Image (cartoon, rainbow, N blue to C red; front, side):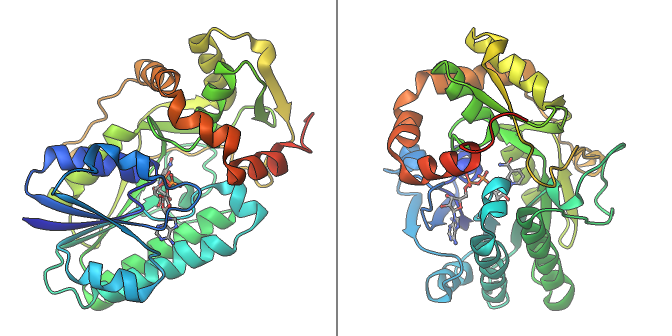
Length: 339
Ligand SMILES: NC(=O)c1ccc[n+]([C@@H]2O[C@H](COP(=O)([O-])OP(=O)(O)OC[C@H]3O[C@@H](n4cnc5c(N)ncnc54)[C@H](O)[C@@H]3O)[C@@H](O)[C@H]2O)c1
């Protein structure tokens, strides 16, 4: 059996990856290491909870005593764990530095002493390139992160690379665009807007709504990571983009159409400070390995809306009872009415 460590596997993309990899690789023995922050939920892993090929460890990647032995016993490390919400990083950046930078450092130090390790996948983001007014970012472009989240991720991205260049740790960095799909914590834009629309309450749209994101279905992201594990080259960076550039206002209208709600639910709110206008990725390098995204955005979004409609028991307790969500929502949108 191949021993695989997935950090942050109780979060959105991590749990989709664990489920996907558990099905795709009967020879993988997967350990999920997750701190279960507000964004991590054990019920995201319900499909593998009974499996003898999956083990859950509750712990912090920044805690060497917990994390290092798990890294040292692994052949593959897929490192998702992070504080991930730009808006939260603007409210308070401390946890982003501790987890995204120092936590990654702890894992990399352990990776130097992992005898069987053959891949350390550093999950980075397109946000490290900063705002891209035109064209598309290639892997060799300068990094110009512009908020505490993307700056922390850029730090981790380059730290991971440095451990390949300096110590020959088998690091590969992936930079994906915005993901969508099932089990995304409902304060991120798609699940927030879908669940607000289902409840017939306002959709708080930042600024003029013309910011552009490139949407990637989480299943396509999982397949890309898997391909990079099998066929990527250590020390390299791979962009993973869905090729679906959509303005936020158009995304919002599509969600309203799919939920049968009126445009009057859109509530313009003051913009996010330093809001990056556009991200776009050149994915030529990954496509040369044989990857193309399978999900078509219209149908992928419709299926995602359908998932949130059918799984109210997953998100409604978070939105109605989870104090972390309620505090965040009040701080974030309470004083922002009217752009
Ligand atoms: N969501 C996106 O659109 C997107 C796009 C590109 C890259 N990424 C990257 O993918 C990764 C996963 O993103 P996501 O959207 O699934 O995030 P998420 O916020 O849904 O999940 C993060 C997970 O990490 C865990 N975690 C946080 N701090 C931890 C710590 N100190 N120790 C152990 N576990 C900890 C949380 O409990 C949670 O389960 C992140 O590295 C993120 O930067 C996300």
